[in-house]
Length: 73
Image (cartoon, rainbow, N blue to C red):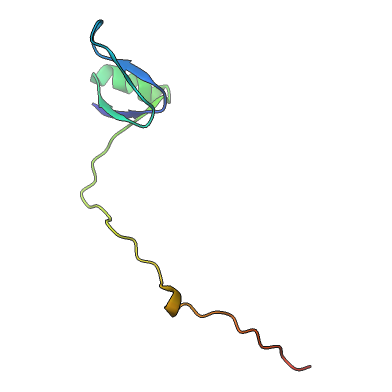
């Protein structure tokens, strides 16, 4: 199962183990992954079908600025 850990993990067999930094996705045994998820130390990586490549925001020219005119009393 592919997970993203919240802590540093040491994965692999003895002699060939490597450290995986927090926030890095890694494939590990399903039982071990479920245990880490259950204890709150990792989250399951889920694939999304669509990706947002660009988020549109209003440009500065289309945004109305408040008027500085004072009203007469």
